[in-house]
Image 1 (cartoon, helix red, strand yellow):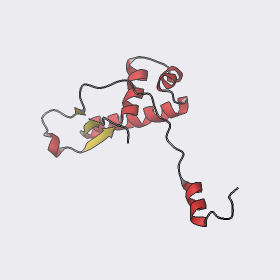
Image 2: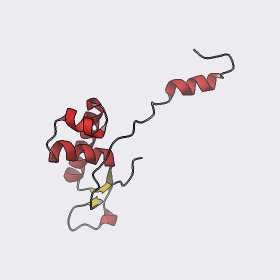
Image 3: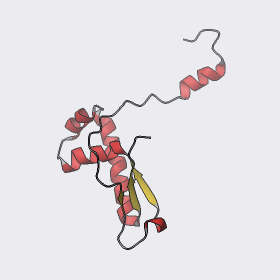
Length: 110
């Protein structure tokens, strides 16, 4: 699998490195980047970060009413990946509502 000149540390790095992230097609550009509970200054709130791909998944599935397969095709990702994005986004939004935290929408992918 590896030639003799490859060091053991390079082999370990190869084995534990995650796969490269596939670019996602994100078309929605929100007009606002913060949501927070009313009456509490932003500086006093903890933030929850929602990434653009999570927001796009929420929009396509929840707002536009697309099935997960169709939404995944629009984003050029697999349906299981879309399901993971939706689960993450739902968890973050629920936590923000229940615990009274601010939601910051990132402008770029991490």
